[in-house]
Length: 81
Ligand SMILES: [Zn+2]
Image: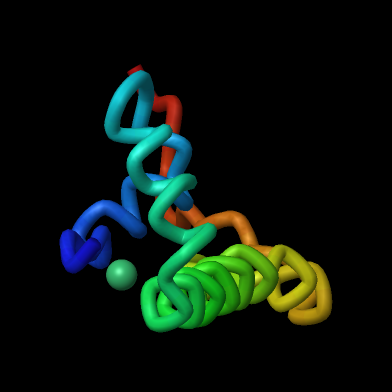
C-alpha cells in the first residue's frame, strides 16, 4: 500500500476525522512506519504548543506591583452655577 496519509495526520490528531477516513488513517499507521513517525512528531509538536501557551496580554501582577492606577486629578472643577 503506497497511499500515505500524511495530509490527514493533522486532522486525525485534532480529532476531525470520522468514518472511513478515520479507519483508513488508523489502519495505515498500523503498517506504515514513516507515517507513524510523522504522526508522533506532529503529536509532540501539538502537545508542546498546548503546554506552553503564549500569553497575549500582560499579567495582572504587573499592574498591582505598580500601586495601581492613580485616578485622574480634576483641578479647577467648580460647581458655580
Ligand atoms: Zn504511509
